[in-house]
Image (cartoon, rainbow, N blue to C red):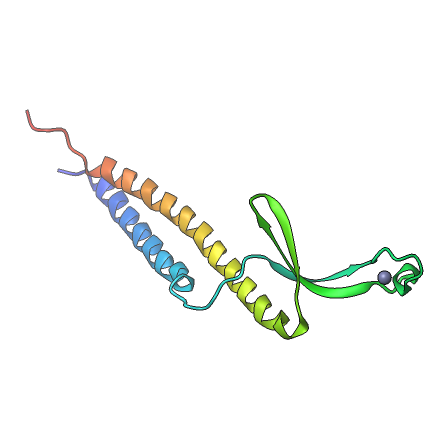
Length: 129
Ligand SMILES: [Zn+2]
């Protein structure tokens, strides 16, 4: 027969577990999406070109929109034509949401396993002798 306190603790753990499952379902919504994902960040790059008499030497830097990402530990950069900026930006934001969801799944997963261990401990009983 379980002690009253153990039963209270068990129902509290079950309640917390239900909460984890609900959050997992909510977090996974982004994963069930179908839109394309682009890894990287879109931002405006302002730079000097290096030509000695260019306007950029007087402070008017060359501006362009770029996508940067890392690949096998190397930083990559791609200039974006202006007609593609909005689209790539949206896809890169979606990628970020996807990766955040993935990170959250790892945490929830860990929480669920910890709850299962506590539930197991409370429900376990020594075999009858
Ligand atoms: Zn220049």
